[in-house]
Length: 355
Image (cartoon, rainbow, N blue to C red; front, side, top):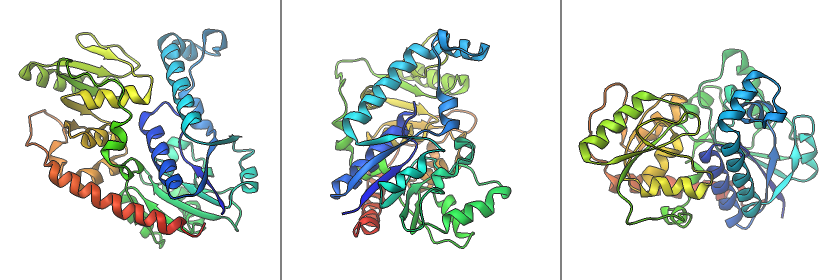
């Protein structure tokens, strides 16, 4: 049996990135395959997410990042890393200069999910297009995401690399159309976290507190006062308190929370009554747990637009002014999620059955 190397954006402080990594790894493993997670360090991602202890600071910017975030972020990173080591088999660490050595270990490379083909996020690191993989290696993309459309100057390079793949599926219909326009065959499969039913994720909840007062959860990466004000308005109207989950800028008048484990993050969503989020995976997990959720579509619009249309929840998107909307039809959402799960799992099985 050949060995599979999974390449994705795994070593990051983003909850969704690690959860989709874990979900796809476990799905492939559950199909009886020998798989390892490739511990690749993308320079652009490392540079963006690194915080320094004061003694290691090299600029004023580093000092500011250290004073504001280093302690909590280091705990979060350590917990994420421990989670990976406990639940997945990792390779040695590779960089752009050494990644070709992975050809000595793996017969097949699977790339995805997450925005691995978002060149603005990876700093145009073509490793995620498997530029290093030898011609005789099988190359599969599963639920890879593009985010925003590639620049025209990169089009020929993208085509060259995608033509080397044996099979491609992407996460969004817009990305499918972009690739089809290049003359390349491509299917749409679900985000890997959808490959598992909600009970799989409920088993990770460690802090279910039935006696806790109901709350509204705001999950965002930056200090966005518009989202926060919408949540506070909603909470006031319903007699609820507000928890705000974001690391960087503590906000007055709400309960600031900083989950440093995946279990804590999932629990925050599972225990919330209502969720306001601009996060793709924040929205997904709210749906998995049947939450009353409102979402904002600010960056990487294709994935949020596709999800809203597919699950018939576009009416819950807040673009400008906030107003309470019709409830979510969770019978329909669950049906569509099951359809996407079954189709995607079957396609994954077919792609790797002979490996």
